[in-house]
Each structure stands twice: as C-alpha cells, then as structure tokens.
Length: 175
Image (tube, rainbow, N blue to C red; front, side, top):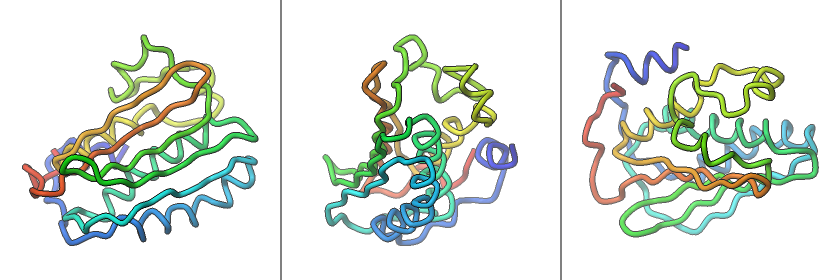
C-alpha cells in the first residue's frame, strides 16, 4: 500500500539518472530464477542492444518486479515467462510474456485500476492486493511512458512497457 501511496500521492520527484536496462533486467532474472525454478517455470531474457535512458532505477525495477511476479504467479508449472527488450519507433519496449491462462476481454479495460482482480478466486489463493498493475501504470506514466496488455484466454498474456528515448519524463513526480 505504501508503494501505491508514493506513486499516487504527493511525494519527492523521481531520481532520474542514466540507466542501462539490460543489466537491470539481467539482475531481475537472476533474483527471480529460484522462484521460477521452484514453480517449474522457464524464465528467459531476450535483449538486443538499446540506448541508455533517463529513469529512476528503483521505481522502474519495482514496476518490472510487479509484472514478473504476476506472470510467475499465474503461469502453470511447465510454462514459461520471457522478458524482451527492444527499440521501437523512438521508444524502448520491455515486454513480459507468459504462457499462463490469459485474461478474458471483459477484464482488460480494468486491469490497471486500483484493487481490480480479474480472477478473484485465484487471486485469493495467490495473495496480493490488486494494486500491482496500478502501481506499474503509475510508475511508467511518471517516466513519460505507457503500459499495455495483449492477452487472450488460453494463450497467455504479454504486458509491454514503452519508455520514450528522445525526451525526459513530462512530470518528474510520481503523482
């Protein structure tokens, strides 16, 4: 709850600094590998060289942890989660793709709303507050970026963060 308050409340500005995304993503994969292995889920990183961006490493890491945690939580044993980093049309794209159950179309417009749970029964089993994706959205938007999802039931989900290359965030605060 504290993280959401920081993202949506009046808080100090982002601590922007040059950030190389590939080492950050490699670190996250290493940190989450044991959890993925315990759940018998393949966790992979697919990167191409990309430029350094101006970002707050701590906040961006939190957004990525939230996406990866969701993917690992909802992907069944034997499934896979892949993190992909690419450059596309003046932005950097970080995509988290899983082979989980996917999400019904009726839930997609609300996924980034606070406290929204697409699968309430499964959410109770796995814990959580329904705030993770709202936090992701707040952090990404504070960086001048966007987050989206491509999903269909039975095919998994892909959440994509797009961060601008050619301009700093419009607002340097997380509100």
